Length: 282
Image: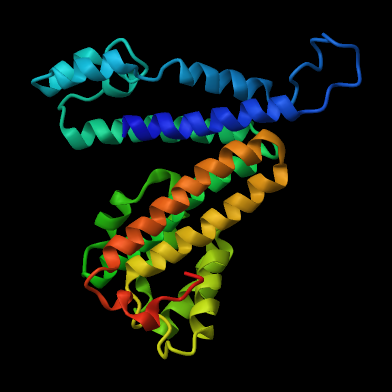
């Protein structure tokens, strides 16, 4: 969880720095403090401060030497995680992870409220992956008969919808018609709705698939949605141009490669590896 926090903040920092590099110079004289860095100055200051709180190699080395969770808290007492841990009376691994995630969510949401375009859209794109993860978690959990409250508790806070939306997702049947109703009734108004619509459309266009979603496992749907999200994110950063397109383009290519490798590895020994299922556009 700590490494994930560092990754998200680092990506936002890269984008802020790039935006500052490409922001047109103010019309007033150079050095005018009234307009210098006027668009992204405050978010940049926030993220640079968060970056300084990253755990370094020495911190991780000390954590590997801990024998108890109290030792872990002691080693984190001089970091930014201390405030998140000080109210915990009983230390458990899941509690530590939850505190770290909540710290990340608080920081990202605060940055989002301070951001303007294109940074605000950039941060929104980061949250879309968590939204997809949450939708798939609810659908998969429903198929196995798990309690909705338990599933919602496991959802990532950065990908949460309104509670009414979260609770309505598992109520639809796991059939082609049920998923169509899920999109038209619930997901159509969410940021990830277009990705779900694209999956339904492309699946229905394939002549070899008779039942659009009935024969497709949840993980395949998830992989397809992630693919559409990566493509959409890549188009956005490419439209920004400059160093944003170069740096974020490379990062998204790595993410796309990871997704493709996972799909390939998980397809061995399954019907997915049959010739009829090897569509070139998947």
